[in-house]
Image (cartoon, rainbow, N blue to C red):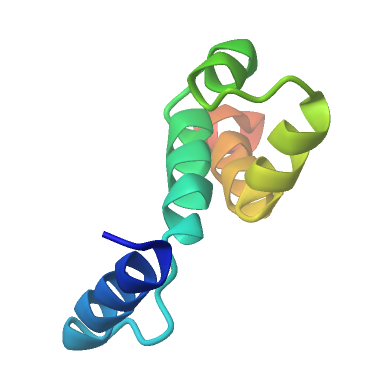
Length: 82
């Protein structure tokens, strides 16, 4: 399968389930976010994703960093433990 054909298959599948504009690269962002949200280690993620620099970790993790921060606060806030 050629790269353009793969892009088209992913886009078509996304459109068929209500996700227009789906791109394979989005799966890397989703994987990184979910890994970190589930408490996975950054160094392990870097190794699994074959990233040699923390820049890539920051780039891929940034897309949902605010959501992870809010969830961490919700879980650890002293006010929520009253």
